[in-house]
Image (cartoon, rainbow, N blue to C red; front, side, top):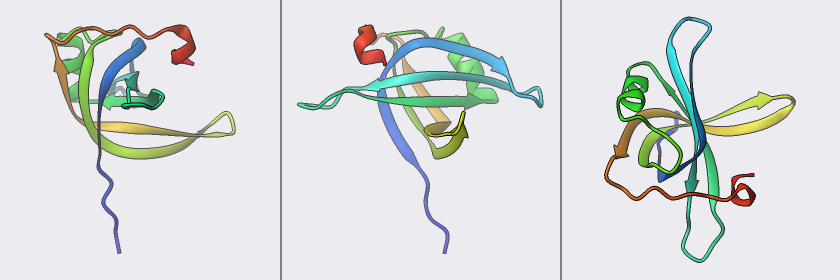
Length: 109
């Protein structure tokens, strides 16, 4: 039986947004979202964006502090021997009029 793999998250972009191309020449970008939880610590999630959604990130000038909503697939991969969990973006909405929120370096680690 197959499972359902859809994750919906929202938060503020923390750190830099990196634009690049995959080895196959597909546009890509990557960033982290800071998800503030009521009465709890902040959770940080890596988001990877591919294909046409990258142009949305570029045209909206996605940058640190922007609030966005991401729907995507939860993925695991090994990086330097450690398991990394991230979201592969399927849909993204960027709130251009939202308040930019800055996170300190302590929260960013």
